[in-house]
Length: 382
Ligand code: MRU
Image (cartoon, rainbow, N blue to C red; front, side, top):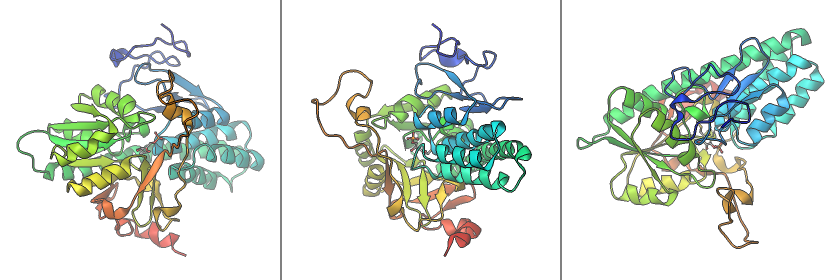
């Protein structure tokens, strides 16, 4: 069977011999240290992404060679996860400037990419950073400068993931278990597929696993888009990390039964006071963790902190389509025709419910981000 890009499809679970349709010589799994859900194509003003709407069934690589294609990839969730959304937008802006580096096109591409998804602040952060890097340059120098900035954003994300992993690993090492594996619960996909590196919430898990510390991950399926089931289970499996899939509603019971040592989640936008916006269902996990005295940490690269917001109240929450809820696999509707649906894609967990926040600069109390980032916190104050 051939995929849309002309490459060979591999049905899950036989993915270790995955081939990309665009670059058939490249045969990645997430155990490949060079694995990226986005790759800049050498010598071309284009990037290659993995279409995450096709996982876990098919590995389909797609080439993005216009800003409109980059915007579509973000909007349709072919790429998703806050850091990856930001990096894709940055490359999209650089690609746009390669064909027309005028002020007008800079503004148009910036606006097109910014309006793709509202919640993850990495999108605005990456676009602002690229625009700042080029706006004072002559048009002839803009595309190359934007591309360099996008490369830097990608490289810094990989480094931030690694540092988060190392800080989180220390937390895992300190957890006492009675000889069995450390039991970790996660939600959504804050993994390698969502970033340019080891992931955020998954980075401590991967480093612990590589260090020979036995871990087991409770993977929350994450209705309605099933990022936990489709993506986190896929990448944990590819890395040989023991895990068990649960329905979202099972999380609280497992915590109450003492079967969870720590909850690790990612973030899409974190306010200056440590309120954490992440995939819908994170707040419930935090309430359950508090109720059962299970430590819960958000893994947060600094690009995900919105210093302009004092708290999480005004974080824009994306409302997605009713079809995602009614037709989870695109088949028969799961509710009577005409049923009203609400589908908020994210929620805000108040800082007081978290045990701490893991950043690339270390672990802090949920209300302690300013101590780790005094420059950024100070600059944002009125
Ligand atoms: O809707 P998505 O799949 O883009 O949501 C992703 C999440 O909520 C992740 O937990 C978050 O972006 C952190 S990714 C390191």
